[in-house]
Length: 117
Image (cartoon, helix red, strand yellow):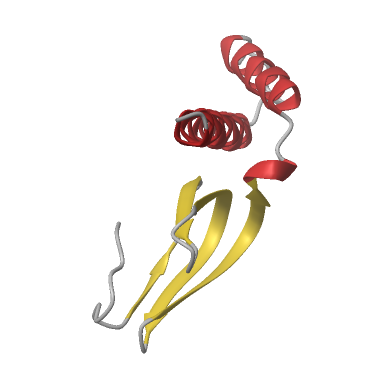
């Protein structure tokens, strides 16, 4: 979902995913969010997330391990104590963190190319 100036007011729930915020200097910043709400009003966007992590705070090695653990739990789902919803939520958060890391790397590569000219 994109929000431009003059967007109609709205409130919506957030699922686990990536948020891109373009700062006044034009630079994009990426965040992993999980749960919460987004509000658009008076040309402002407010996000109240259950979990929110800026790209610089995300440890990609840890996110990769978390994704692997969630996948393993899902493959071994025969246990009566297995909580599929919890494993799926864990995997979704890990995948969103990895996506933010990928976007961070692309941004850094683009900055190097522009700076190197």
